[in-house]
Length: 561
Image (tube, rainbow, N blue to C red; front, top):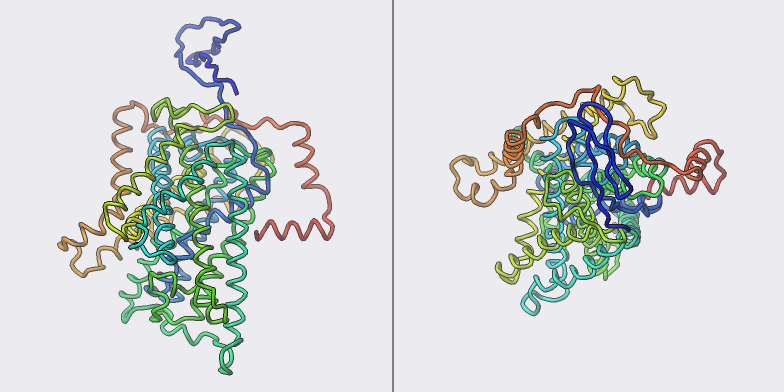
């Protein structure tokens, strides 16, 4: 790819002027800016986006932390947490799908809010999303290090060494064209999906009494209690504590919207990836939580244990007589964490590149290689990972476990903020689209149940924040005056005031940044993908052609997997 720069003269009153090596025309009242010709390359195919949509969300949150949510909130309480957050995920994924298919831009989480709401919100949303993934990368690296301690004691090999070892190949893959990231994610996602399916199959057999020593089906006898807590207030607080785990588990569901900027045919592949979100939430998240909840009582030590040896996913394998179950699931969770770390680098690099292109980050991060890789942006997130390695080294042999627990709570709030912002952005996007007299039929993908799902997403976000804050302040009984709580746990909620401060500072320092973009001024033309005749024909054939048995089976596979 060329690294040539052109000078664009932005229009302020009438026609714009373009100055290139081939010539220019002058224009009064114009603002001159530098814009790169460098572009990311559209190399992601439908199969990549399908796997990223489902596999990118299955990580340490579900496989390593979900048991704790059941122990603290109870089986029904945990289902409530995951169901409410899952409902919000579906609304957010649909919103992003509608916007990303019409305007498949890289760095959607900063660009779209600035384009359809206000510049200050775009700035805050972009940096919040970058921080989310920038912290996810070291969190997953720390998680991998702690899991390796199952086979090799931290006394013999410090945990931070494993973080460094796993970091090298993951970073290397992301330094090559985007197909490297996509193919790695494709393979890792298949492994995760198969492991979850096998787990649920074995779990269902155990639930119906197979291998239960003649005691018959388990039924719902382990829903005792269904929600942990002696009083309604305690039950309410225990459920609120489960939301942190739920948000951390679902993080990454929206990643398919970010990949639209590098999708080969976003009009076809992005909607297909988005439409299956609802079914994947039911199968992989609510299904797994339900199975664990009916097999184990909330007070079972297996649920509250932080060791992989006694996790519920390992317990199911051992109960079925698979003696190497712990080794299998430990390897699977390491694969899941590697996949999440791979996605972290990708999301971080593209978001930072967009922030740089929009003048909200140093310009060097907007540069890409001849193969379309934002290398400097990749190095920025690698630096964050190295900081975690240093922190784990300074914290002692088990430092990686502490780093993982420390980061995961902050990430949960960051994810919630990103989803709420995108719901607001989509409301403005749709109303502006209609206000300009545009036709709904021209949208490649239409989010279902608008505006109810978007409004519900905002309500769920507000309620969950209230739940989480009340649960946190009630955790010690005297939280407002408890020094240990403020030193050890209050940082979890630091993302909210941090984003408020960034919003105010940017708005004050950039006049007009608080001003809402008027519906009639919204730009729905820039960045619209230009489809080739072959792509248009491919989309038309996918919608018009009747399906035979093989195609129907393929559709079901894509919906679920």
